[in-house]
Length: 279
Image (cartoon, rainbow, N blue to C red):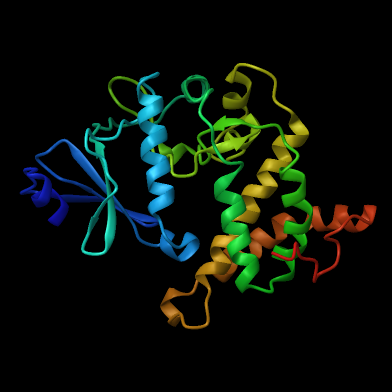
């Protein structure tokens, strides 16, 4: 609200539309959505560099395609009361889900729009896993990271959404719109199709060849990234109610067990429970 007042926006009826990694508020009646990183600060520290890149890349893409939610004309990030706030054009979401074929084609359109955009490699997973390695001695985290991170750095690189799960694709009357480009990065196209929210129909509809082996490796890295986030949430000073779901942690570690087993069978680095990248 303080940001809206500073910018002269009518926002008499604000509505919180999301509260998790970040808080998002529709500044009704203004057609503007604000985004403030909250939980994300625990994972990544200072959010400003991530927010600045997100705004710049989203604006770049919006000039080239209509499949992305564009930033507002004065997007920031603005600093208000010690918090960074980015502003986005409000889009009306319609009921229903986006068909797999539309998901694939809209993702391909976004990839084409970003084709000439210089981006860091796999910014989200590399940052999150590195942060967890620094504070957690979880053997599955260290063992899987020792296998997957060096491998990921050898993958082909092209501009990607970076976190292209179904929740970041909004169905609108004018077609699907991608949002939440904080994790924009360079990597293999399989990374954007590795989310478990995408099924085989989506992957078949995506134009171009997909490497099945790399797709599984990307799924493993996504699992490792989620495990990193869970472990970063589980800090000694947390209150009991703030602790993450131990069942989720167990499932993630079980999903990564084949990575460690394969490394052990081949004698590759990462097989031992104390393996680490030394980051």
